[in-house]
Image 1 (spheres, one colour):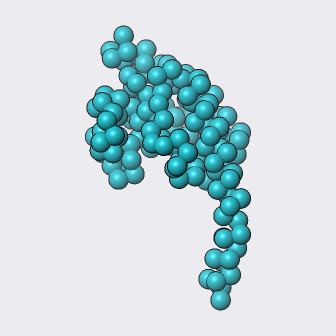
Image 2: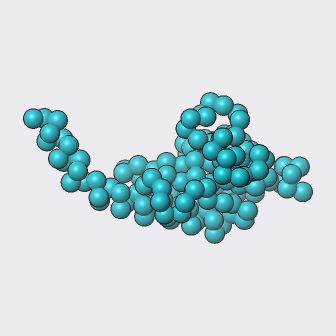
Length: 142
């Protein structure tokens, strides 16, 4: 009975949580695309998991982005979940036709029901200067 009650409660909150996650994801995606030149959304813009934001950035390495985000307390991943821990670019990003060097600049951010608009704004404040700094060091962007 306890499991049944937990499932019923989760079902009641599901649509509200999905709506919240879709709103935050859209804010994050649009904020990144509008503030960082040569950034690209991977995957379909609407048919995606709520709270999942996957981007690529030309002329930067995903691992470098992660290290710099971590210094600001922002947790993220580079590439797909199935290749986490590997320095190889996601086979999925390569399969959809991204060049190897672009696929290396991937960033995956996952939002949860407890994330806030303020946290998304914090990411949008910290990420553009990180990308700009990394591109200034990259021989590919020159």
